[in-house]
Amino acid sequence: MQSQTTAVLNLEQVTIRPFSHETVVNRFDCGVAPINNFLKNKAKKAGRRYEHKIFCAHISDSNNVIGYYALQVGSDSVNELPDRNKNNYLKTYVAFPAINLSFLGVASEYHRQGLGSYLLMDAFTKVAKIAECAGFYALTLISYNEKSTQFYKNLNFTIYSENIVQPKMLYPLEDLLSVVRSGS
Image (tube, rainbow, N blue to C red):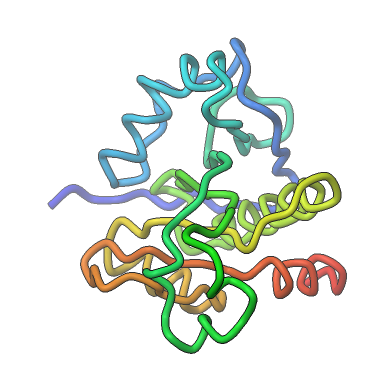
């Protein structure tokens, strides 16, 4: 097992900027291959084709990525929602509109220092701005492993699929807007 160095992070020094040609990704490693591979091998092309909007965390003016997330517009089957959610307006639809948090990763040396939550709050703020211009039901994601599932559960995401290894999770827009308005 590889020894992991932890760097002390001051969130006040973190800036979040859109992915650009100046973004340095070759040193990024969050410990999850698909999340690393998207940033290193596909982010530039996905951004250029407008498939995802990618936002990267940096320390101050550095171009080295220490964390990132990617958003995209999508929908999912209403049939996958838990029965308790079908008592609302969605029960008359086949699919529900959503903003999908496609990827969220934090470089391993910055794990457990609040950067994941910081990135997620930035994503919430951007999703709230999208809600000013377009309607949708929730922010959705697919969790990659047990550790990330627990992270999202602790932040009040709800599992809505039967897949327990990589569950689909959601955060209803109404709840997300409340969090953004309260600033927490």
